[in-house]
Image 1 (cartoon, one colour):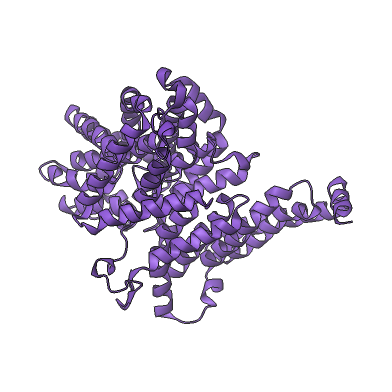
Image 2: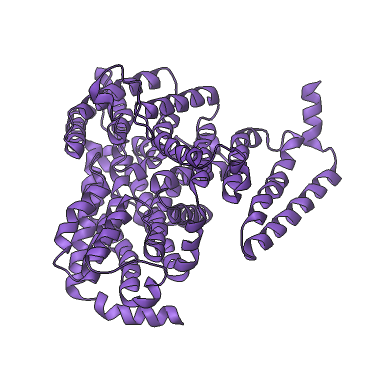
Length: 559
């Protein structure tokens, strides 16, 4: 009842014509910014910030919220059409979005991405309104050791994403970690692997590496022969590209378990300060692949491979807002900028902020909710223009994309070396692709390597006792998840063929119940008891079943 009372109090000040116009402009600006590779959402929000100084708190925050939501959704456009993630939060969208576009279904892929972003944002906004203060308290429990274990779990994703090329995937992931160590040490400033080159002292900037590996290397592959260079991006079907809004919406709704799971992953990761959608979209993609009955088809144009990351990255915004508003902790760089905007308008986020200033707080909730509808409406009109890209020949498109990528990368920091970074990693990515190594694990190593090193340094600065990784409930939880994640590809491959796979789920439940039981409060230990009982019951049923057809096959194969 209190929720509706607060929403009713905030609505008159929020639903004004001028506020709606500002949000509409902000959403459109965010879509354009997100669609341009190298031009991040954070840059767009920073550019908008000065224009909000003369506005009141509600209008200023609503405008920035619209840019935020539009930017998160805009990244899917370039990711699906060109294979280049417009923002780091759209990295996983390219894995299946681009292959589906190359198969002549660019309009359908874009429609799926738009609806997934919409549903992810709406689900997150509802969660934001209902349980913001309660979820925000989870963020207070996290310490550097828990973040490091979370990142280790995220890095185990490389195992499931490499498919049958696990060794090559692990090698590519390690190469990404090595690249992340180049530059100055995060603690002592000691130079590493610089070989006397001053420009390398600061390390390789993430965006030039990302665009080089994804964009430049792919462009080199697309124009390596005269025949491929003269092909159209959308293939022979590019002449009749249509946006099937109803069909794509039905496809997303048919995968509602994937939508809900990915949205919850996005909100949870968003609640963790400094985690962000760069991690959540990859984790959601990984979980969608693990839950799929045909995981081997991921990477070839699977719809679930678009739904999961796009749902998660928009939902992450809701989780990040929970932490910012309830605790005053920025969940990512965008919410850090918005936190600054709040302070400029003399609004100080705190655990009592929502209760003491409900009109402003619930105006932010409403802005996040309404911005998702504006994003859906705007993309419905603008996608037809963007999809015309599929009719352009590859050699023309490659030249234009490379120019704008280089322009965006240089404008990011005004550093000439970033251009060389783009070129170097474009060539490296081209060679790695040609040798059959997957690019994704390498990108994950680069993305997560610096974060992992920073968190590990903070852990070791406090104590050199490695048992802290097992004594902290959240740390133990993520480490156990990581172990089972590494074993999951083998479980999925042999499920129904070997008897040991029947013990996988019961063992997982019983193992995860241990760290959950260690967590404070009464709810989570109670849930842990239920998990333990469920695991024991499943284990007893498996044992009582005894050998079956699958185990007989296993025995015959071993004989």
